[in-house]
Amino acid sequence: TMDDAPLLAVEGVSKSFSGLRAVDGVSFTVAPGEIIGIIGPNGSGKTTLLNTLSGALRPSSGTIRFGGTVLTGLRAHQIARLGLARTFQLVRVMPDLTVAENVATARLFSAPASSSGSDTTGRELLDLVGLGAMHDAPARELTYIDQKRLELARALALRPHLMLLDEWLAGLNPSELETGIALIAKLRERGLTIIMVEHVMDAIRALCGHCIVMNAGSVIARGAPDEVLSDPKVVAAYLGG
Ligand code: ADP
Image (cartoon, rainbow, N blue to C red; front, top):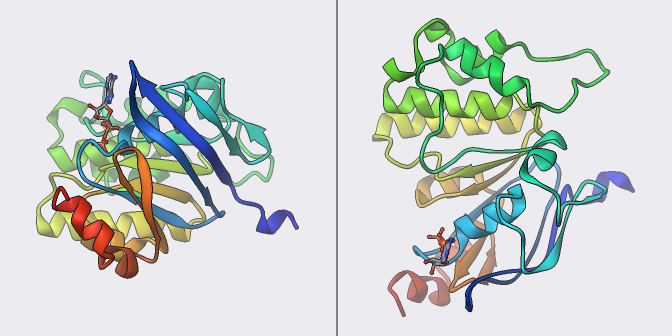
């Protein structure tokens, strides 16, 4: 049935940069409503893989299907309008605009509102990410974690079905991390499907039903976080073996 169909199907995706295979034949699927983690040492191809999913980079080979649509070859803005949103490792908010204006401008590029009539307003999005009180503040005055919250609100303003989080939890202190993990869990409860590239293994354990481990462009392990994190191949990859 349609209910069993994956939301995202990545089939044999590779991306080379002048001879270097940064991503090398990666395949995985993501079911609706799940959070999957992508982990692996620095340089293993995680960001390049996300960039091929979001359309920032065109895969050298392979196919990406999102819902019923083949994404391969579409441009980033077309993919965003289909309901695939992302955050960036380096936060990209508009510093001179207020928090509310940042969300409003992001919504201009969103997928059409669903005909069901239930739609989240900008105010609700800011409340959801914990920025309701900062509505009128210029984005540049926000703390680091609040800029991250704002970037997430901007991505949510696209009304996504699938959210790519590129190290969204990086750089947070322990209490902020707890808040951040709770926020991601709340997004899942609201039905959002999430792919997270993350180095914070506590977050991977807390949030992800399963994860894939990349090394040198390839998937070297996949499964439940506790299983893959104790896999000798994975331990060796992190130790540079
Ligand atoms: P990760 O996100 O896991 O740290 P990346 O996807 O950033 O890994 O990088 C994978 C490999 O591809 C690395 O060897 C990196 O140097 C290389 N790479 C990434 N982007 C480019 C690029 N635009 N041009 C050339 N090489 C790149």
